[in-house]
Length: 166
Image (cartoon, rainbow, N blue to C red):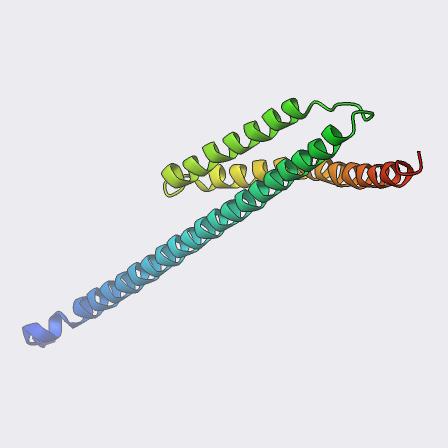
């Protein structure tokens, strides 16, 4: 039997086919991996940005709550100081507590400014949770202050109505 010899390019054809298929498969895997990495990175960036927005929003609301509380206490103190029959509240202690809250909030805002870009997602989530907890603890106090102001206004109105006839 005579063996037929094929030209060189025909003898290498199966190897070239496998090499081409392997290279194409590897290229497809690399593209899919790069696409997956890019999508994951963009998702993490979007989550980081969303958390940062939440943190700034909660900080703004907490600051507004503290300022509302400060204004309410100042108003209540002004009414109380007009009527010596009412017991004097510890306005100074309350003012110090509110100022401490505002200073803590300022420290948090400085942290946001200086570190938030490089903070981990866990750190951002903890900061948001901490501010939410602080706001939740402040809400009943604000409601009590509003009720106390209403009661104080009612008492002052009653006192003023009785005063001219006395």
